[in-house]
Length: 419
Image (tube, rainbow, N blue to C red; front, side, top):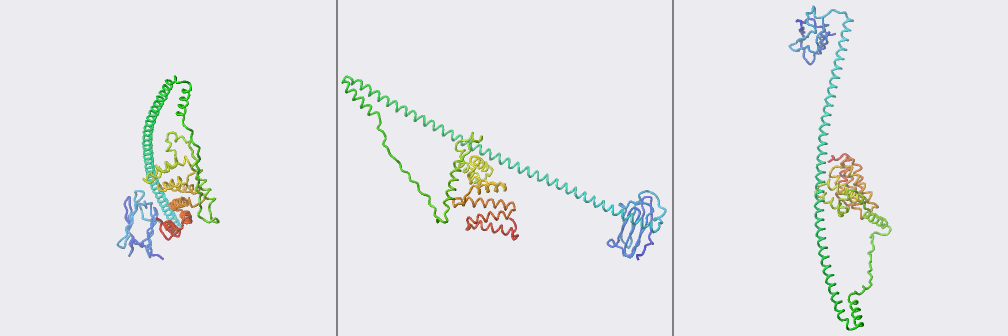
């Protein structure tokens, strides 16, 4: 049974009530204070102080000070008036109802406070999310602007290069026309000389007409024989082709696959799509996929990856059967972190590098490694490892590919941190 504290003191003004409750050994840590607008309780084992207030108070602004074996309460009245007593006289049933009502009020207030905190936290999270989205949008826009600037720069460089090529071609054409004009003048001079000689011979023949008809005919026949060249002699040129030698044994031979690969390569070189509106303004050499591939390789070497992609794009539009175009464009996409496009181009290159023969082994190795690298950068390590293992099947002695494949295995097994 707790000991009820009855030797307390209280004072009041019109707006506040001051209660002093003596509790020996009381401290903040062990004292349990419960207060509502009509009920005040202090529990400090073995002491208990309980009072049913005469009138409602402002329990949110009221205060309690603990120290020197005493608790001093400062309770602010809701209505400014003098109380007749500190507590009201009620029976046990009414006391129980007031206690339960006070507990429900406290629980309701605690719930409202919790909900208010949760709402405030959600609002803070929403605000933080909006700020992060705005920052990310600004970053994305900045990156897009940088890409657009790079694209415009690459386009201007390509246009300037085309203009230089056009001017050089125009200069060559002018020089060629001048050369042809000079040759035409020389040919005309030669013709005039021959004509003059022929006229001279004819006049001489006319002067000799008095020597008789027979002599004239002889002279004319001789003149005709001199002016008409002798027919060319008939000849033939024999052409021999060196047979293609396959070093492998007949049971292991890939003659059929090699012939199919050579046939596909020949068809790819012949397949040229010239019905593209953009080609009408280009020079003849710029319509050559091989020339565009070499141009893209030079741009890649100078780290101008966007311009290199533009060159490869035009070459693929001209001829979409050349696997090296897709393979080189995949390397550019890897540099620019366009990982899904790098995977697409590598897969297309592998599709064109069939059937698998020694002549296209190097291209297949590059395609598997570039696609595997893109998979690993997307954290798809199992797919990346499969591509590296496919490359090792083609070239098992490649130490670099072996080391990279081993690193991927360790990442999958969780023994190595991702780089």
